[in-house]
Length: 160
Length: 198
Figure 1 (cartoon, each protein chain N blue to C red):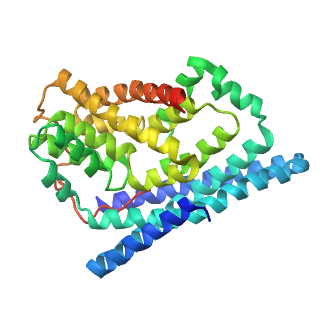
Figure 2 (cartoon, each protein chain N blue to C red):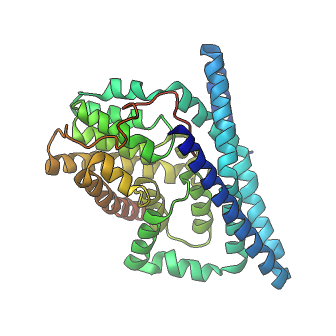
Figure 3 (tube, helix red, strand yellow):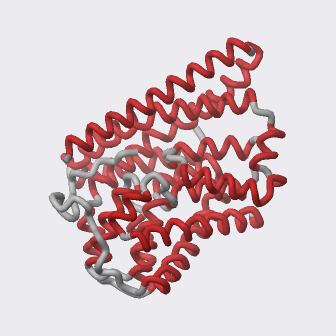
């Protein structure tokens, strides 16, 4: 177990103990919620793990770096930004996928852009957002998030 | 209403299971066709499986605790009607705690706007809810490393603030006449009923 995993587990344990100390019934409910969410995310998690495996075995690194690597340029960045905006993958599961892409030659920029559009923009939930927050605010937020995600990715590509 | 939500959740779960089935089938077929690829495929999958199993239960516990101990009213109480740059930072901080998908945050954002919270703060809150989740940052730290995580976090905070101010420039400082919840039968901010869907 590496340091980060250890840290996360210790943090969860400490928070859980504080929870039980403050309000046992609530802490129990939190555990039920946790168990449910874990079961809920499990199929997608396993599927993504298989996809990562397939990608490592079958897709040559050259292909990956051509599509999302340094040489893919602006078209590559726009493609991943768009993919992140329309895909509906739980962000927690997107990180291992991003890590494996990075290992295989994807650029920091495209990975950062992908994660940022994936989390900030919800194409699937846009109609709901427009209905609740009004068209103007919802459209502005999503459109600007798209641009911001690309800027964040580009800066990260420069500094990392 | 609630039963409908549960039915939807079950449907989504079945869809995910089906997706897993299809991926498993494709994997099986491909590996039967190319048996020599078995080792690289399984070793890559195994590495990620182990890493995820080491952290996922803990991340879920953290998310469960947040969803139970941080009710929606608390958020509205702290952010409604507040203004100033400090309130925008507070909005980001508060948005980073609760869990659940982004669409859970829309009604909260709507009621914040109705209470007169400034637009920039509400945008900051929504964006933080979307992409500065604490459990999420921890998973990012695990898989992408401290440099990547900290750089993206810092840049996101800066740009989310800028975006909030820009949107405020366009639509005005306050926006009390947002549509709000589409279903008038539902209470404006439901607490305790929220279950983490991720």
